[in-house]
Amino acid sequence: MTSREQMFINGQWVGASDGATRPTVNPFDQSVLAEVPAATEEDARQAIAAASKAYHDPAWAKMDPAERGRLLRKVAALIHERADEIAKTETLDNGKPFREAKGDVLFAAQTFEYYAGWADKIEGSVIPVPGPRFNYTRKEPLGVTVHIIPWNYPFQLGCRSVAPALAAGNTVVAKPASETPLSFLRLAKVMEDAGVPKGVFNVVTGSGAKVGPVLVSAPETAGVVLTGSVPTGQELLKEAARKIVPVTLELGGKSPNVVFPDANLEKAVKGAAFGIFMNAGQMCWAGSRLLVHESIHDSFVQKLADFAKGWKQGSGLDKDVRMGPLVSKGHHKTVSSYVEKGKAEGAKLALGGARPADAVLANGNFLQPTIFTDVDPKMTIFREEIFGPVLSVTKFGSDEEAIALANAVDFGLYAGVWTSNLQRAHRFAAELESGQVAINEYPVTFPQTPFGGFKMSGIGHEQGRGALDFYTRTKSVMVNLG
Image (cartoon, rainbow, N blue to C red; front, top):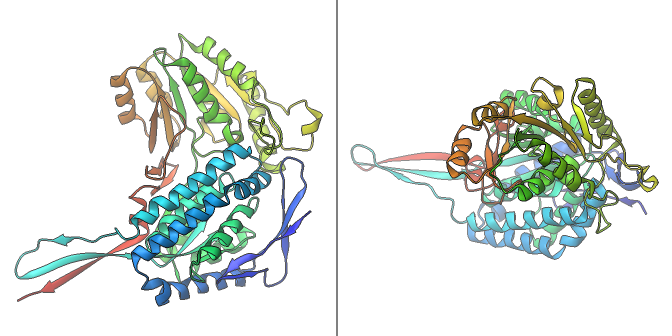
């Protein structure tokens, strides 16, 4: 049955002020999961106003940081307790296999646990200065923060920015993607049940094009976080520049996975497969460019193709399914167009490239695991982010050629290196133009490890201690003791 959802604004569950809704659809079979409020601009302004009021309310503003940490631990505990329910919601809304969705939810709970521990440890410093003076700094929250959340990892990526924002004492207005809003509405229920003061956490659903500019440009907005596309990030930067507010942007990648002959090739095959086919390749950090040494290229690609053929596709609720559908019909069309570009530009299709033949999957947005070989750096599928289960394989002969190929795109989010030569591994870690480098594993991250990109992949970092620097501002206090 189709549910009728509500937004969460100022501690209340509400519909759009004009009553409008929009459906969210199961990408497995196109069934309508829920009718979700299509927020108006006025709804967005109300959410910002609620967050601003809560930020100044002593119930939140004067809360003992240790108590704020305990509150975030309650949030984490409730996420753990409801992990199966939230993961099922994510699977139905996004299409990813339940096992992946459950991992996302547990990662989110760990993120709240991690930042709960930081809540009472955000410190200033004392600075030696000339004369009879005492100088110290205070780390203060920004205020109202806006979080624009993507559809590929709605719960996990939303929580990774919300948790540090709340730990630092900010208030939050979250805007989940129109395609996948349901899991963040479940987070709102968690916040309510944990006893988070009203207005501290708000969720606005609907069109990003309609309410996003309102949220970003509101006078009360003090910081914005976006995970999304480069064009969206560029537009957000323009709006943020008008207000002079800080932003954190993660804008995608075209990540290289570099395999040398001396690597553990069995592990490298699995890492290459998970790096591109997990979540149907709908990942900013997907290892979408596989660079393989020429001496092992043919055998490695064959082993990879054989392994990928065993990935069952279907409903994410089927425990045997390894890869689900793409998130929407429109996105399926976009990814499929890249497959056609690869063929037209001369790449060799070594695996997949079409819908699966199973009639049970006919209504879903499915695309087989796809591998192209003979991919030249000038080809579109080498340079542009596809955001689907499409792998581009390119040969290399020397370390220098591998580094040049790895750095030959406009993105720099993530990179993998597979080798038993530690000298080579550390050299590549230093020379790769990438915010993250994984050696002999792909992909991997934790709440305590910084995550951010170089070049067109974004600005700033999520996760880790450093994320708190974004959510706080430094005030210098100079006291004349003379």
